Length: 113
Length: 115
Image 1: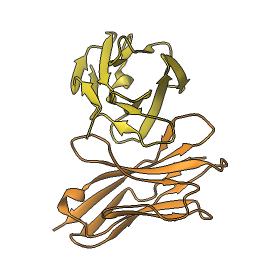
Image 2: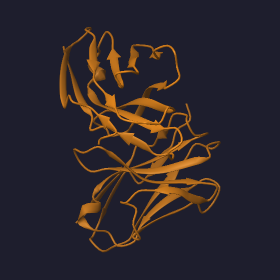
Image 3: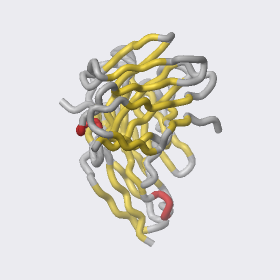
Image 4: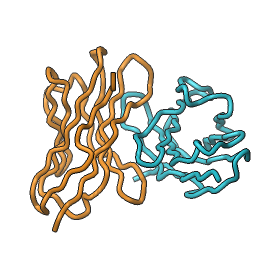
């Protein structure tokens, strides 16, 4: 079965540094998402992306976050100046159409020191 | 109010027995979808089952079935014939049809299958 690929699986960074989390959605999918899960807590929506623009974002997704689809395959999440509280598992997800099931990647565990 | 409520932080079940994981939801949108995902210790999110608000029958996928009670706003997951590999976190999630395209997740239930 096709899958969403995320790299790296683990990222350790110093507070204040920029990180880019990378995702390759399933090739015929049109809707892309980033979610995060702080350890022991529920999965939280960050942002959705369609037709090369953000379609919806949560309160968490402030100015330090940005997303980009630089080419036909990659979908990236950039955190400009990381904070300790950004430490979490970040999931990318994609779907072919809305109201279908989301396919999740295996996540990037971000640790901010 | 919470969109998705999972009241069981942890559950235990004997191998080969059935187990029900509870989920209630809150929405005023007549069109919505309900999902269950499994998260093993390795961290990935695995889709299990989907139920649409207009679906007349309860969804089933192999050993997984969704007990959908619309009037009670509940969408419990039933796992039959539990296996050791079923030990994981289970998340209930909802998407509201016309209110955006984000998923709302519950806090999860940790299931442990005992040999």
